[in-house]
View 1 (cartoon, rainbow, N blue to C red):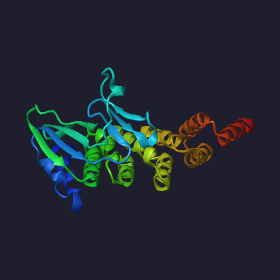
View 2 (view 1 turned 90 degrees about the vertical axis):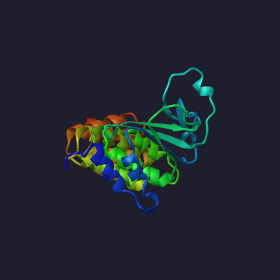
View 3 (view 1 turned 180 degrees about the vertical axis):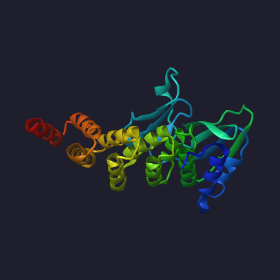
View 4 (view 1 turned 180 degrees about the horizontal axis):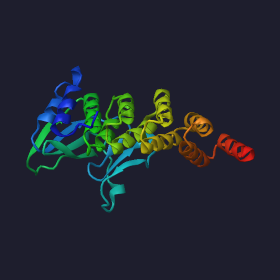
Length: 262
């Protein structure tokens, strides 16, 4: 199936809403050209200054996961624990840009703004993931969904990552965030993605990279299996490259074995 874009895509997003999210997708789809705003609670550890950066304190005090400007002194700015604020720009019925902020307030000026107010975080996450899966310029919507409170989005991200009709850049974003959020089930999905010879080359490479970002007990065994037995020599080479960056003794043992046996 070809990729569906524009107002038709937004209609499809509206149809994905579940009971507690019913109406959010429809309201985004029905909004006129301009900016659609919404806000929702973020998960524990996420904070931002509402303008220049977003930080994930659960991954370390200095883990900045979004820096939107080079303003001086941004590291000294306060870090507010929410809410997330998402601005969706529509042009010609399609999404032309998605911006994500945490903390702060919306500016009072501006025209052609549809403000949806504060919405359910899980419902927002589902709607935003659906948006990213269908709209070419909505990749930041995945990031917004990732930081939503009480939202489980990795199954939907796996669907996007495997969907050859979705934009390649969006699929790569989905794989990256899968690697960050991965539990055992998501890790298995990444492994399947790297093994799938029918997938786009860039997406498979991103899946191998994502596996290299997992904790060693999860990622290294899968990378070793890929390096040993994947039928695609480029996947084997990529897996070996990331194993070489891991400083894991199992990786060194594999490399020694390969070189010894020729």
